[in-house]
Amino acid sequence: MEHKVPLIEYAAEKYPDYYVVPIKAEDIVFEERVKMNCFYCGKYNTCWKCPPRLPDLDYQKMFSEFDHIALVYSKYYYNEGNYNLIRTESSVELHKTLLDFEKFLWDNDNSTSLSFIGGSCKLCKNGCGKDHCNNPYKARSPMESTGMNVVATAAKYDIKISFPPKDYIIRMGMILW
Image (cartoon, rainbow, N blue to C red; front, side, top):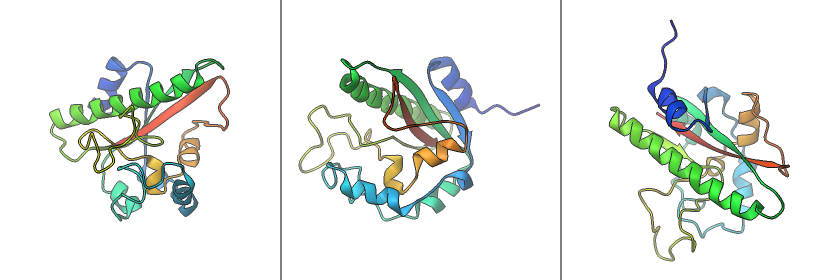
């Protein structure tokens, strides 16, 4: 009999529109060119959880220290009139879902769980605080900021993310525990 992971059961019950796909640390694709894209982002050096304000860690090594890793994603359909709204709201919704997963893990004896979002944090409607993060306990860093090629990693698990998106956005994050 296969052992079920309580987080995956919890997610399926509470968040039926989300997919939680267990992955292996060795399948995560790390590339320096992904980190360079952060440098060219218009938000570079303005977000407290994005480069260059991240700790200088070996993220590939850190990810391998976790027993479980899962990609978490959902599809958000849009049209020409609501694309920007869906883009922002979907990001915040996924972010809050990942925070809920962290709390679930904390409540179930896992004090070292972490989550990463896709793209920059959008919790603050007016952007990041000038002198400090306005939500230091809730803000999370993007997967891309670690050098993770999200598209290539997802493709290893038959999740196709294409650019530019057509008809729907795939909003993806990652939880590690």
